[in-house]
Image (cartoon, rainbow, N blue to C red; front, side, top):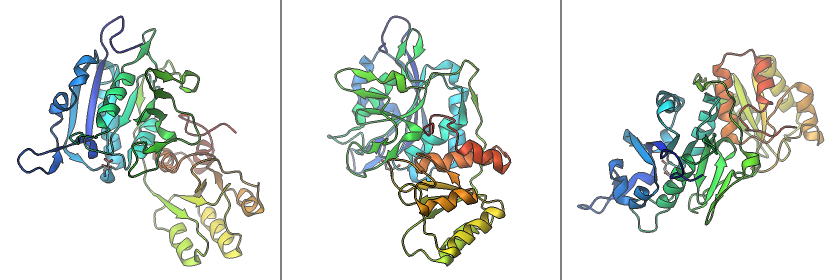
Length: 348
Ligand code: ASP
């Protein structure tokens, strides 16, 4: 089960995109600067003892993940595709800010994934004494190379951070300062690293037997309407009628509730009559949308708003972009939004 077990050592591709993790002190100036990742063994000499082989692919220049985009997701997906047969697993070092978006986007772009693709990063740069980068990288490499009976134990796109492995499209960054910066409130962790790494195998998706493929078409013509008490018709209409927008994620209260003022309901109905898809997603990080549970969502169901169930915001954004990118008719897009495609939402 470990990297150095029975057969050949695992071979990993480490893709370094940037983010805090890759910073080290410049000996001359003392300032934190992006490090040349060829120096990874200098900063983490322990990886020589992991019993795996690895190659590095570094973005040049490294990027802050706030500048992430569908184009770069496409590049990452194709990078994995181009090297798929040569490696047992992939480690993506990524800034934590948009890591959950990238993990979600990749999960939709990959079809029939049978190898681990694990994103990690850190809260403190690798060059800091108290850095969390070391543990995050070492354990991510161990999990990315872990096999049982010759097959990857975790053939999913995941995020590993601070001793927990989560399904990527269920994960959310929830702290800018704690080492446990991510959580997954609606799905259990896929593994927990203690003295041993305990895999939660019943919750891990088994791969399909069809060949791996990448479908990286995305369409970013979406907008977000976040509800708050006192929101004005001008603000709502500006979002619902944003030129070119094909779908709106409506971030609602509690179980999917909104205000019931006639101007609001009429505005939604008009937008939907014009072909806009409206996806109802709760502002709460835990729990799900239940249209009709309260009167304040019953009418949403009646007018055909799509139920975002327990999807994260990150999964909702990237799934919508991906579905729009496929060019499906709106009815099929709405139906697939409510259907689990990569374990991103729970069966009703
Ligand atoms: N701003 C950084 C980024 O997301 C933060 C981090 O790496 O954690 O790239």
